[in-house]
Image (cartoon, rainbow, N blue to C red; front, side):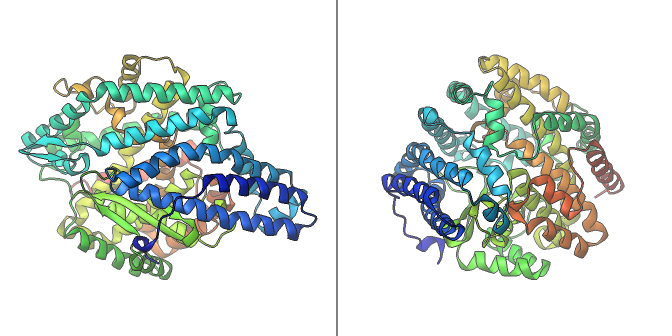
Length: 564
């Protein structure tokens, strides 16, 4: 079945509540493992059907946030989802209490129970009103950004459509594009401030109602951190400041010399890697997609089968359009065992990174499609990001296919971007922790702290007075994850560290690197992140020596190939 052929029907939430309540009772009454397993598998099928239908609605809403039908469905999901969670948690409690836990662990995996224990800590019926309001605010923020129509050069642009102009080699045009975007954000500053302040307050209240000291431990449980804690993240941040920030600053010093500038540089100049423009993909969006198909056919038999599946079922929506939600993601329609990729092509190298990054997620989902339970088909999110970020590096051998004569420029740019991203991503994480440690902060206090942390993590960047939004320390407000997915962003940094290990291995022996990639990917969510790393023979990113080694290897290559 193609995605376009799926008939959406709103799930009956009241019937769903009754089903989960009944299933919990039947599991508790089961007299044998076989009887308990039948109920378990029935719940698996039912959950997949309901969850996949809700995912269809969310995808179609993101494709056009102006569609009144799916806008109403999105609002329904925002309100109904937290109510249904109460009944899903009854089922989870019954699973944890089953006398047949040992048999379930032996036949399926033990991690499903650990993750369920974590999930149970994140909910109580008492916080349903806060969850509903949180969903509504996140939807408002997403729709606000999707509604952008930015006046520039006699027409209106979405945020995604303006991105290529913000990398224009013409300095004056590039600066004008940044200024146009800055004005749009500045005009919406009061609402952006209000949405985030309310989100922080709601999340802090939820944490306290659930017995946490504040939102941070609840946020970690919501992210299903099952093998590391806040202290590990703090050690990682310290290692980033010690090992990555100096190397990233050297990268930008080289870029500044190319541009005839000195450090620190403003946002518009830091968006550039080369005076004649950043590497851009060649061909139309359709040609980029077909080249992506060729890449996956030539990479391995597993990826060839996967990419044909994706194309045959129309599991992509990648073109940027007015009203379309921003960003990109991969999600899974569990009932049909199908991944789906959502993105916004805009003529930059990011278009190629979509067909490699998001398709890396989709390939992992496809590989794990038959794992039961469905929750074990996906590991925790930092582990998932290794799939995608490493796939980007596997694709570099096919850079000529995507970038033509600019292939070598792209390779340098891509590695430089990977190294310099880690400080930014870590800054986002550090900032979020401080916001939730100080939920009463005013907008001005949050912005001031962002600027202080920015100087520590990104010393090559200066806030330009001509860009009021950026100069006032509001750049964090364009980072969707801060509003929508608290504490997600450090996952990218941890994964990038592992992906850089793959980058080094690929240069030595791509076939051996691919075998290690598959060894990491196949177990999916049956192991924790650190267990996946150990069994695949990969380094631990929380170990400062691992971070130092990958950074120095990348630095050596960037210095040796600086003429690209």
